[in-house]
Length: 71
Image 1 (cartoon, rainbow, N blue to C red):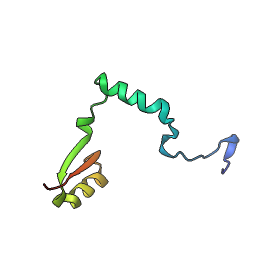
Image 2 (cartoon, helix red, strand yellow):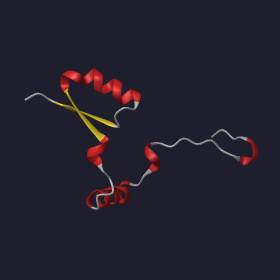
Image 3 (cartoon, rainbow, N blue to C red):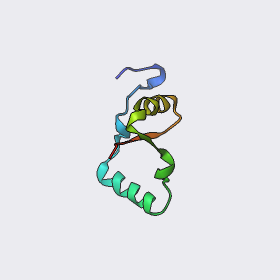
Image 4 (cartoon, helix red, strand yellow):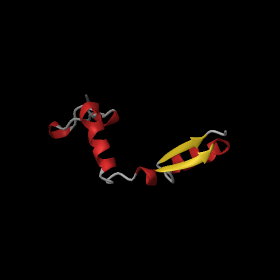
């Protein structure tokens, strides 16, 4: 780890360093209580619009692009 002035340290974080056994039940509780509006985070795109989905994700226009496969 690189050290900076005054004893500060720069450290990376991977996936928020969550503990799945604690974190997943908490997420489920939030969903059941209506405190996590997943439907507002998702934007669905037909598979043919995969490039648009990628562009909007890169721009931050959509949080989670979901591709729908044709039947």
